[in-house]
Amino acid sequence: MIQPLVIANWKMNGSYAANYNLLTYLLPEIAVNRLARIGLCPAYPYLAQVGQRLVGSPVWLGAQNASAYSEGAHTGEVNVAMLRELGCEYVLVGHSERRLMHGEDDTAVAAKFAAVEAAGISPILCVGENLAECEAGETETVITRQVMAVIDQVGIDHFFNAVIAYEPGWANGTGQIASSEHVQYVHGLIRRLLRDRDPYIARELQLIYGGSVNPTNAIALFQQPDVNGALVGGASLDARAFIAICDALEQAHRHALAQGA
View 1 (cartoon, rainbow, N blue to C red):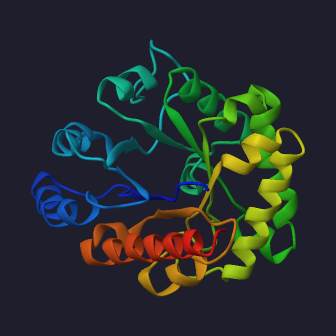
View 2: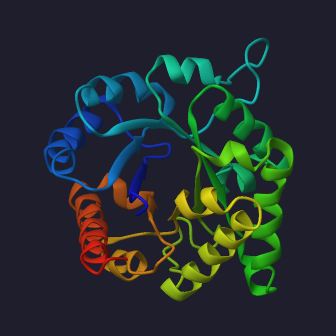
């Protein structure tokens, strides 16, 4: 059975003091007796601080972005070797805010995916439609294009250690909530796209959902068969809310194990 996964994306938030206080409350609750794997993705300046607090903990460190370039004259960029040296095990690639606000197209996202995977770090490929695409009924077309852009460039074999996060731009940080049925529909689509190319990878790959996930909607989301976890934005900055989301995933997974799913 696929191991569930919860990722905290702190985005451009935090300070040394705020991070210290959040981790002091959070770690005793999320670092013990968990079936799910849990990761924290702080902003670049705090990777070392958070990474040091996670030493000896089962909670892993991730980054929110990475450059497709290995080195050189790329002012303001951070390459995957630097992230690996800091202990990052995962990197978000193609987050909707990167696509919408920073102009990252499918080609750029695929190049970043390739760079992250080649460095031995697991890429978390983010895919999702924006509001106009959703209202135009283009969800399936957009998701297929975004997933296939990466498969066509790197090959399906390179998804062996990857994660795919469905996070529709219209629900990301807006408070709008996709129904659990809609999320399952999209996750099922992604699973089928992968299955057509490699049934084993399709069966084992973690599909997680991001889009205003909170303790209220988490339970219904995690009951869906192809929802293996969550990419949590704003709620991950609230220790109690994030713990509640982790608990909801834990309960759903234990229930599925008991049912022999």
